[in-house]
Length: 319
Image 1 (tube, helix red, strand yellow):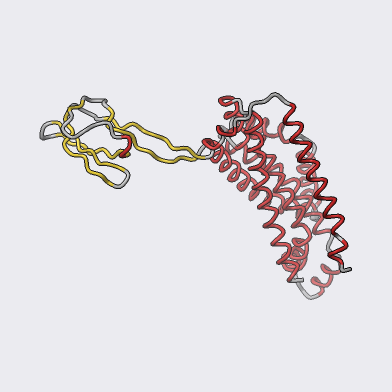
Image 2 (cartoon, one colour; image 1 turned 120 degrees about the horizontal axis):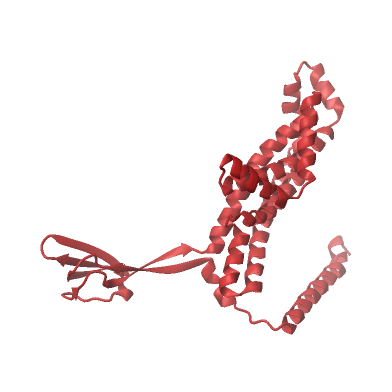
């Protein structure tokens, strides 16, 4: 019996556990008195809007020319004024030669637009991306300062890390928006990005510090004995080795930052979480919307995790 055959009992146990969880969830759902409204959710991903096209003055429809799924309606008033309106063919409400008055509807134009869930997801992505970039930069500088031999630099970095890690992110967002934002006249987006970047930077700093200190001192001593400067040693010897070790915790921090970005909704930034709350207030589809929002967060973080796994495999090949 090979190794693969020996795993089948565990695979069977896993299947039983998953089936049991699914059955338990289904049973719990059946016991609550809730009317599911999944049909209301798709329109919040994307929707088809209809905009009325109205004539700007009194006149007459002269020609109606088909253009695929649309029609071009030519409308004139005397010899001086002329306008061509393009509307969807199935929404056309006039005929050639018909007299119209200013404000009358000729038809509707139809176009697809992103719904609030997709717009909220985009806000979450760019907010997390920008915050991660600045957080990584700040964390790298602070991490290097944490291992510096300069007493002042080392203690400034330590105070920053301890203050940020010792206070809740929600409190930091409130301070950034209501205090710093008011004093320096900053927008809510700047305050949100700044708070998230400062928060992430403190944790990244400790990850970088731990990664640097995990490299054997013999590596540094060997590099310095070859005539390399402290900067060259850190850049070419220590950091490349440390990066491989800090990549998993670093990715975990940025994944957490994507989820933590939901807190910026308290300062009226319309991210994915705030979009979900606004949809619930108009549809009362509480469970459906929160399940969809959770699934969207899970999708984003899963894709990021897979990217990190790919980078880890590539780096492992170079060892």
